[in-house]
Amino acid sequence: MDGIDFDLYRGEAFGFLGPNGAGKSSTMRMISCVSPPTDGELTILDGDPVRDGAAIRGRLGVVPQEDTLDLELTVRENLLVYGRYFGLPKKLIRERTDQLLDFVQLTDRRDDKVDPLSGGMKRRLTIARSLINDPDILILDEPSTGLDPQARHVVWDRLYRLKQRGVTLILTTHYMDEAEQLCDRLVVMDHAQIVAAGTPRELIEAYSSPEVLELRFAPELHEQAAEKIKDLSSERIEATADRIMLYVRDGDEALRRVREHGLEPAASFVRRSTLEDVFLHLTGRRLVE
Amino acid sequence: MACSPGGSDPPQYLPGGSDPPQTPPAHGGLLAPHTPSGEASGLPGAPGSWDLTIRALRCWLVVYRRIWRSSIASSFLGPLFYLGAMGFGLGSLVNAHGTARLGGVPYLEFVAPAILASQSMTTAMSESTFPVFGSVKWNKIYIAAQATPLRPADIYRGHLLFNTLRIAMNSAVFLAIMAAFGAVRSPWIILGLPAATLTGLAFAAPVAAWAVTLEVETSFNYVLRFGMIPLMLFSATFFPLSQLPGWLRPVAYATPLWHGVELCRGLSLGTLTMGAAAIHVGYLVALSVVGIWAGGRTYRRRLYV
Image 1: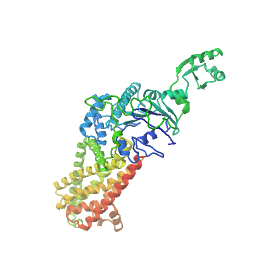
Image 2: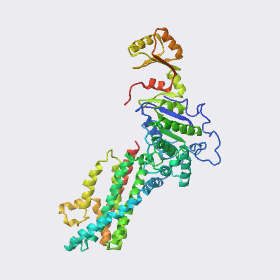
Image 3: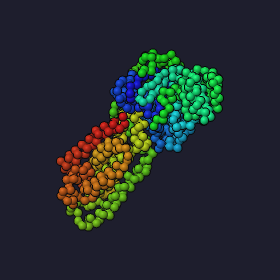
Image 4: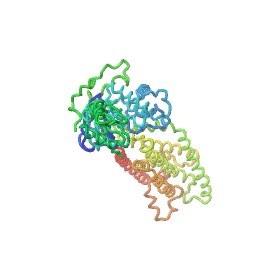
């Protein structure tokens, strides 16, 4: 890691955004006390992750990027094994198992093996498992990656309820809609550094415009139009292979200006700025391998 | 770059900081508003190593509950086949030629305690190669456990303890069958259970310490083929060491299985001297201790990165 600095408050949802390889998962591992901090100072729940690792991990819940469920065991046995790791008595584990399976809507699969469950169900089970010790902080590494839209919304809904209960959430994601849905505050990471930080709204205000005008021209007119629009506007403009995007205060007004200069787009579209605009602005459009 | 105005004041948009927004319902439960536990009391002290080791062991016991039937069946069949084929089949041939070189005992009584020791090695190897590797790479039992209070050394010791129990179980079954076959000569054989278990531990501890470091599992085949099988064949298991050429004998003395075989055989035949027992036990304990020390280090290096 290359010098990142952030503070977390109880009961908030804090997000790490960044392209693959930006250092999100490494940061997560350090916060989860399963990696030594490379340098600098890290304090979790008022403890030192190196000295108090075991005690801190006892107060954390972790949803790793890849499921680490035991596929040979049943849904309930997975929670039993995990509860035992935290030293919980069997009776308490059984009570919590019932509540948690109800919470993640897996009660009717309680005695089934994990292997045949769908990806969304496994994810929900992983979330249930991470809550068996009633953690103060829940750490989620790309909680909805690889899920279909229905499954993602169920996961978001459950995480939102946890947040309302006062559980602190720390999550990484590269889905902007996930970040906008769940995070009170977030940081954008790139090349193992924090490149921006704030609430979703603050980030949009700081790094994008209120509205975005997207224009499409016929292929033969595309380049020419892009050049012309660059001349007539002082606002930020981005031209991709098939679209021209104008980051403006008022999209309709900008469209009028474009038309006044004799340019007639084949299609136009005005929308509000999103975190995705911020993200692409900060981390670039290049493909990260 | 700092991403917050300071360290202590929660921002305005947060509902209530550390105070739960409403009082929990009467039945409490997990889905009631969450009360952070760390703040008032500070972090609780970490549980002791032994407690954490037992927690890791219990995971393996839950897993074992699913397969114990087939596992027990095979731990009965193995000894039956071996003692039947070696003790009676080969044994009748050997006995017909005279047993002076075996110390005057029937071949079955000579070979049975050696197979006991050798079975401990086999159990130890099969429990501490693929299952250890798979716990990192396949079913990720270690990776899951790592996110809990368990430390890498606890994960190692818990798994090793389970493997030791498996070795002890198989040895107990073997001893019972040995007794049923009448292959036992001395009451000292009652100590064959700890002796065979120690022999297995001397393999399981270092092998697991090594297995966790691997990226691909192909090395296991070499160890089984060029390590375990020669050990089984040349550690005085099936014939006395005096049958080997003189220069090969010191090699056998250096191997752990030979010490295990001599220990178990000496107990079963009642020929073990105190001095020999001390050497064999000392060797096996030393190997186990070195293995356990190494395992704590390799597991940490593998899991805490």
